[in-house]
Image (cartoon, helix red, strand yellow):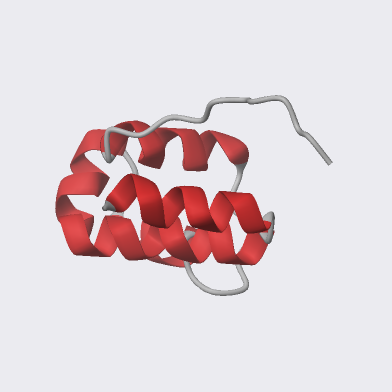
Length: 78
């Protein structure tokens, strides 16, 4: 279910929606757990994954690893 939700946000290509989706998943799993796994503080995670934020790519990758996700590139067919 998490993968479907995140893939849907990625398909839309809306940077804001992707960040919010990752934030929602992290909150559902537990920000304390995600903070421990990423080495980031809870307040930093909330700020980085909030609506309107522009997190660093490294932050996104750390959170994706913590939620057992990854990014895969597939050919784009218009």
